Image (cartoon, rainbow, N blue to C red; front, top):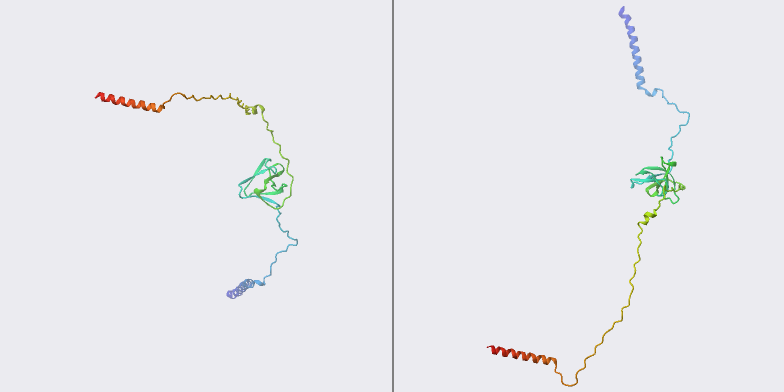
Length: 211
C-alpha cells in the first residue's frame, strides 16, 4: 500500500520539472517571441555643443626663439614682456601703418601690449587702433659745461713767415788782359817741352859720368 501511494507523487514532480524545462527551452529557442524593450525617447530638444570662435590671433614665427612685447607700437616704448616661439596670443588691433599689432597681454596696465608685425603671423582681421601716448623719459640728459670745456681743444692759428726780398745780386765783370803788341811771345807749351828735353839730357850726362 505504501508503494502505490508514492507513485502519483513522483509523477507530479516529474511533470512539474518537465514543464519548467520546456518553458526554459521555449524562451531560449524562440527569442523573437519575447517582447521588445524600447528606450524612452526625450520629449525636449537636445542642445548641440558648438565651439566659441576665438577671433583673430597671432603666432610667433618659428625662426624666432622669443620676441619682445612693448607698451606701444614703437621701439621708444618700454619692453613689458616676451613671447616665445610658436606662442599664441589674441590679436586686438593694429597700427595705422600695419607694422605693429596690439595683443591681449595679461599682467600689464590695461591688459594690452604690442608686438612687431614681421615677427609674428596674424590670423584674422583686426581694426586700426590709436597708439598710446609716447612715454616721456624719466630724466633729461644735460651736459655739464665745466666738464665739456675740458674736452674742447683750441687750435692756435699758425703764423705764416713773412717774405723779405733779398738785396739785388751784384755780378762782377772781368776784362780780358791786353796782349802785348811788341815782341814775339813763345807758346807756353813749347817752353815746357824744351825744359823737359834739357832735363833729360842732364840726367843722361850724370849717368854716364857715374860710370
